[in-house]
Amino acid sequence: MNTPTPLYSRIVFWEPCVSPHKSAFINAVAERFGPGVEVSCVAHEGVPESRQALGWGDGSVALPPTVVAPSDEQIAALVQSGGDRCLHVFSGIRWFRTLTTALEIVQRERRPFAIMSEPRDNAGVAGAVRFVQSWMTEAALRRHVQFVLAIGRHGPPWFRSVGYRRERVFPFAYFLPPPAEIDGTRTSAAQLRIAYVGRLIDKKGVQFLLPAMRELGPRARLTLIGDGELRERLVAQARESGVDTEFCGVLPIEEVQRRMRDFDVLVLPSISKDDGWGAVVSEALMAGAAVVGSSCAGASILLDSPRNGRVVRPGDSHAIAAAIADLERSGGLSAGARRMRVKWARERLTARAGASYFEQIVRHRIGHAPRPKEFYL
Image (cartoon, rainbow, N blue to C red; front, side):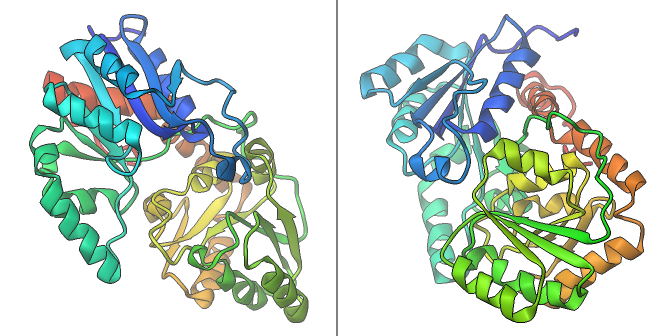
């Protein structure tokens, strides 16, 4: 691979925690920039127990060079050792002492930095308060940030709305390793296989799935992967409505990826912008499954392309059922359509694709290369 002379000698990713959704991407960035650029990660904590309970594992697989839970002295030393040729990329600017401490030093020392973040939820009175807080407290960040990697459909509009300059804001995603098998083949089955992966809680919109399945009738089977406070209610609802439903509980990420190949459609019916991206959408597309997602989910921006799925109004069971039926009727669930999705997703959503896009952004902002087109186009 012929890579131009690097603009930095070092890149440090500052993370709230060790995350399997970031590790592959950071490793891919290191591979992309080559041995002339030292790429590492500093995490406020390891994989939280709450995330391990959701199937994340302990984060030890393919972990990039990482410092976990550094002291204030270590943080200062890490910033100082990089000098002016170190780019600091912060996954968030609040709540985590490691990140806020490092960001304060980086700004004081005028070191180059970027922000990689989901948007804040701007709904309701609380959203208005968040907007005012961001507008009032982020002036220095807006002036000095090299670029913002704004995750999901709502990321770029949020950052632009609170004053970040349009030319510095780039749409971004969580870029993941491809599953071990990525040809998109699916074991034939008489039923339409529908899946949901995530917590079984109200704001995820999972309560709207069973009424949608009832509309589709007995030819459809629903698999729920995850756990949460709605589980017992959903079990009773499935029994009363006669919907063929499989409750799997929490599964490891690797098992979810393996099972995704057997589903026709993944549904992400979020009614809150809490899903700043929704990594399971990327996993589904890379496995060949179509996706029906509400407009609240950040990854729903991938579904503006009809080949990938459909975007529906949040909280609308009928719209979910209609979208699934339309995908089936239009040939969107055929073997050929699955292969096209796999090819499309592999070219745009993998860790390597994300690293290439990241490099293009860096060279555009710092090296005056052309602005890259959005990763999903």
